[in-house]
Image (tube, helix red, strand yellow):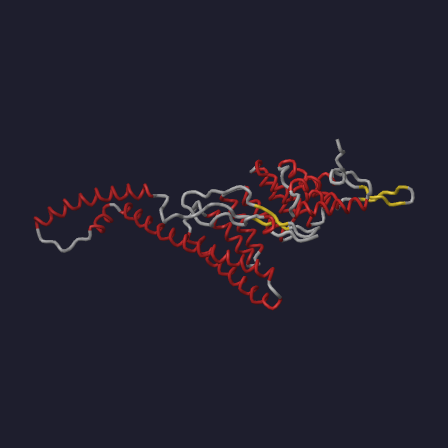
Length: 365
């Protein structure tokens, strides 16, 4: 079967710039989409469409800053009155008003110092994050170019991809280190760090980073991405558990999680087990051509033969032709429709007489 690429599907791997935003991290739906490779192997591709950026270096405690400054001004005013009285009594050398405040109100000065330190950290966190995302995107670009490059260019592209991934890891690790404790951006930083780890070939570190993000924010999209990494690493049982958790956390978009689970099981050769999650996917999202196409493929892989007289006759699982027919109707001129039509033609050759709406001719009135 022809290879179906992400470009041919019209899917976008990153719907917006990946940025940090102070105070909140919002996520869009459908964090995962997938590429359908030549059967029987499919690949799950995680999408990062979350809008998350730091617009500036504002701090969580901006209100605290204002109150501290107000209180500090009151204290300084009192000391100014004191200084005026002292000058009347005798000549004084230059006074450091902040030192006077520190002696009288050390907590205020310590708090102001903490505000300044956090502001500096915030600026560093954002700068390292942005730099890391740029390098991560570059690594993805080199990977895409590598898939199309002639043999004499592949070694150079591999090195460039590796260098970009390594630099992405360095920057994102620095962003994580600069993040204030319990900062709301940490789940996002850890997720991007996980992407960089995987790009650099550090699968175990990628899985650990995703799990750390989940400890801070148990979100469906993070479970989807974790499942994708686990599946690509051959950890199919762990991947299925992650996809199931994603479906539980986000029932509205559970079709994607079940579809990914079916892909992972198919890749592992567990076609019988793959049928059920793919059926769930099509039930929840009956307008997905890829879902029906994948279900048809899983059912075909479960075809068995039975003896009829002296012949071995294929026993085609119920719903196989219907699954392919749905894919054709939803994507008549696209890759899934064409692949499904070819599959139905093959089924006709295996079991002549199988009824499908593709072969049925409309009666003339």
